[in-house]
Amino acid sequence: MQPWAGEVHRELARAGVRIVGYVPDAGHKRLIELCLADKSMRAVVLTTEEEGIGLAAGAWLGGARSVLLMQSSGVGNTVNVLGLLKTCGFPLVTIVTMRGEAGEFNSWQVPMGGGTQASFETMGVAVKRASAASEVAPLVAAALKADQATAVLISQKVIGIKSFQDQTNQ
Image 1 (spheres, rainbow, N blue to C red):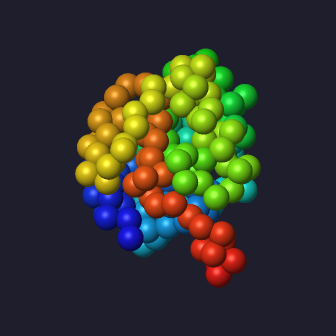
Image 2: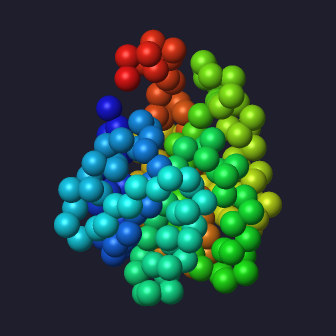
């Protein structure tokens, strides 16, 4: 279902990522499972996305590499605390599954889906967008090598369009 997840996990391991913060998300399901099973990584479930910025800051201060996994609707929760990235200059990598794009069934997802990239850019975070599954791992690998905060957005076209039926059966 998520052919890119294994490739991304390999890139995270290759880069020495030890801490993976995440808010449960169907778009990241397989990647989260791989990180949870990896004995060299600590996958930390978060209550809200902004906690992930603090987790990443602590990891960085302690000399560990980290990534933050979230959905585009959670980006709005992080805007204020993203200022920490700008102030401290640590190279957070966040991988964002997009919602609110073409075909979205849930109108509540649309505003933040449209505002995700601009929100990150306003706070000084570089943004890369994967529009095909084959682009995800190379963009994550490049972000892990960058010396700046970078968000990799995974298009809803890549993760698939959820339907109302999908939501009622979970």
